[in-house]
Length: 66
Image (cartoon, rainbow, N blue to C red; front, side, top):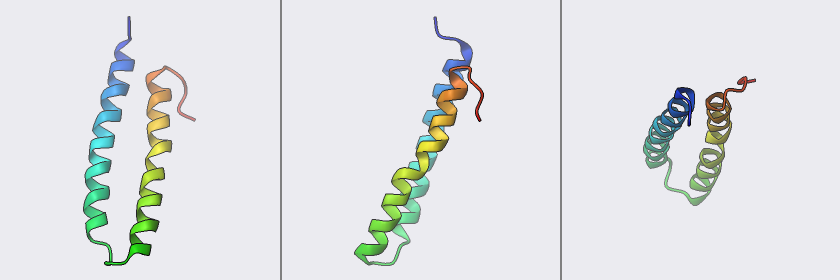
């Protein structure tokens, strides 16, 4: 049976990702109208969430964050 920590970790990931997607989409809409700006922003935004989500997964699994 999953622990409460696992459930909280899952909830934290969902909340974080929902906020992250909203923020990335909002900031992406403010970019200059140039394909290179879009390319750089969305590459960085597409990668930047991974370390945070990874730490939340580790925490939910009961392992140290660092």
